[in-house]
Length: 169
Image (cartoon, rainbow, N blue to C red; front, side):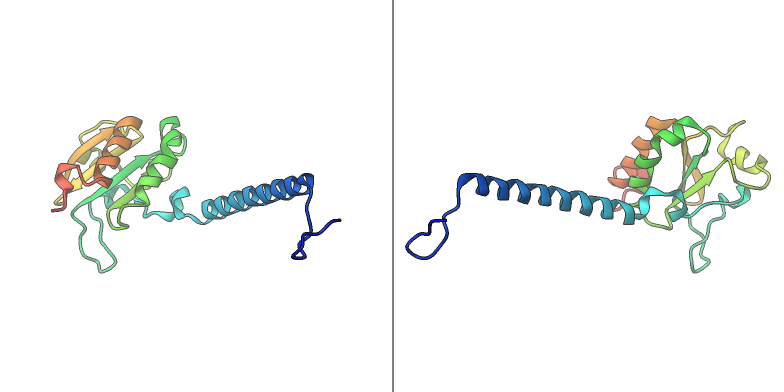
């Protein structure tokens, strides 16, 4: 192989092209690996990473770590078997990941225990529809949002600080 005057070896274009292709392939593999690792370590992908309400009667008597009553919060009512809840799971959890832990709670109608008469009376419904968001402001039910689109819309407003009862000034 020929060399330049300063001692560098001349490279033919085929070898240079091969090195470039190998470098691009290695870079793509690294990007995919980083994305996979990031995706596997993020907490928002699973319901178990969020506070859940286990009994209907606890839905409107939530307390923080210091046993102080929580007065402003959101309950996401869903069901593991409801197609609407399944379809929006990732969208809901991405938004929930950005909300405070003492603000966003889950209630799975498939596993919740207790008598639901008080819960249903409080939300003024005869049946629990999922997916649903219950907004509690100053300890009282402020509004209900039923359906996939409504749930995503209201959570987005809350996240963006444009939902009037929760606007922080």
